[in-house]
Amino acid sequence: MTPRSRLHVPSPPARPGQEPDFSYLQLSPAGAVDRPDVSASARDIENLSLELVRVLDDEHRAVGPWDPHLEPPELQVALRHMLLTRLFDDRMQRIQRQGRISFYIKSTGEEAVAVAAAMAMQPGDMLFPSYRQQGLQVVRGRNLVELMCQCLSNTRDMCKGRQMPIMYHFGPGNIFSISGNLGTQFPQAVGWAMAAAIKGEDHIAAGWIGEGSSAEADFHYAMTFAAVYQAPVILNLVNNQWAISTFQGFAGGEHRTFAQRGPGYGIPGIRVDGNDFLAVYAVTQWAAQRARQSAGPTLIEHVTYRAAAHSTSDDPSRYRPKEEWRAWPLGDPITRLKQHLIALGEWSEERHAQLHQELEAHVTACWKEAESYGTLTHGPFLDPLTMFDDVFRDMPPNLQHQREEMRALLEAQRSAAGAEAEPHEAHGTPTRAHEG
Image (cartoon, rainbow, N blue to C red; front, side, top):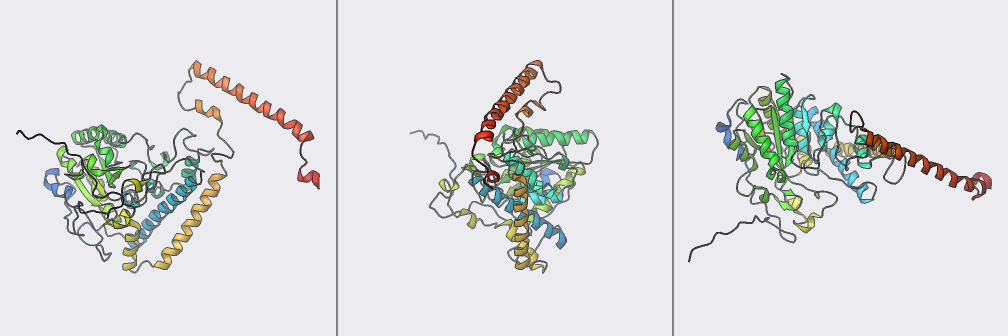
């Protein structure tokens, strides 16, 4: 009997009710991976796409050639940025559950991916984030009030109520608008980097996508253009193990690492411990230096874990073990950096608790201010006429006509509301002043 071919369907190593299983992970000891020169050719450093760059060991020491040798004050700033990002996320999640914003996405467990990369790059470099890199905004000095107002779609909303929550942009901070169409960040980053090179600028670009989005065509378009034109760009692929409810094996991570896709295009691919701040900083710094020296692009696979739900619309307990996050072998990025600073004698649990309290108070104050500019249910509200702005340089006649029709309708509604209020003012229920 002639054997028939069988279709292989990837399967997560553990489902709800089962014990977490990360035996599929390919790990390297801390400090074991060599750091090549930034000018090395992709074919000579293919081992970086198989191994895992790690700096912090089990005793919280920085070891090996990738240690960036950052000073304690800079590490303390990094810890502050990551903790503020997490506390901001936690507050916005609670606010969404209270029905005060419609939607939110947390970055819990992935704070080092964004914070370390942003700190390793220059302010003039252009960043093209996905929706789990709010740490970029924090490092670049964004006021949390502005992020909160965008989630509230209020009168201070940077997107003027035209985008779903967490789709931020930050022009002064060189952070491009987040897109709900996943994968678009990569070709946009490559295009910006090519333009910068054509203009002879020193700035580079960086983009972020999740491992699930690497199965999109945008990923391959970006890789092709980056390789052909040697664009000065860093392409960050965040492998947090889950694309919503789909395990990373469905995007192609079951048989090969995602970083191995780089050498196939002639681009260096590097796997890095995404929960090790020092490792992410060092690898980003290496890739940035490579890009600035016209040595071309780098694909970085950040091996991390999405500790929280995909979004407030998701229930991860339906597709993975409830306590899987606690079993993640690479730990918590905030805890690891904190323990490293304590091991250096530059931090303590008491100072950490104090910082936690300080940042909690800051987030609370920001939220109170954000609410004063309006909420989903309480004014002030955005003027509906703004929907006609910022679309065309010269507004076409049909839109001018529609805008005037809406203006007349709004004025009629205000007049009717005023007429209804007058009888109540004359004959209505007495106020406390009347009672007095």
